[in-house]
Length: 235
Image (cartoon, rainbow, N blue to C red; front, side, top):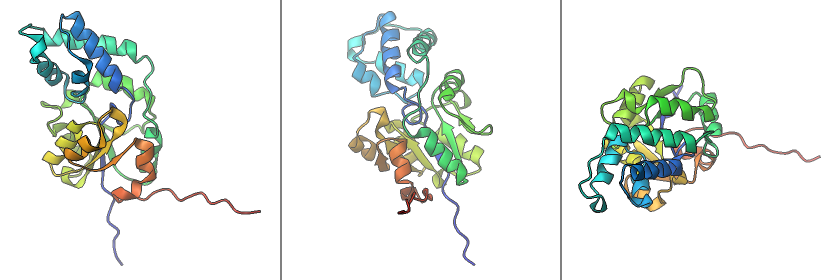
């Protein structure tokens, strides 16, 4: 009797992938930087969403228009988070996120969430989802280096009892694709964070979908069983 191979575990990013917060991150960073006397075009901030907060801030502070202004990164991050909470009073899931997680759980597909965000922010955002009590959540507080380092995904895979190269990373940013590639994991990109299909593919995505709803419609592409179609009987 042939043994059926188990489906690959899924490692999800959070912001822009499961929770619709990318542009609130852009606005909160823009306002916080402005309050510290730093003016950076919003598009430059957006290009870095998904990196760790410190990495994002350090890169932005090296931009030519900033000059040599010195900023306390701890205070900047704290102010940015306070602004973010005001902008996102009620977190919203990206369309299809809950259905996708429910489908994976019903079909006994192992999955975890691995986010650059800190634990306090992550707990707040996860209110938008109904997660099983034993869900595996890895945050930026759990690792020394956040994305584009693969450490967050490595730890999530470890907690699932899987090797990262046997997992599929699902994310909305090029940083997710790069992190996956560094450990030979398949990467799936979503357009729900604002990156284009060519950008995600250039950084390693082997499939790109609009959002979790679109991914669930094509879930067999990942070697995972889909739902049985509902067939109406004629009367």
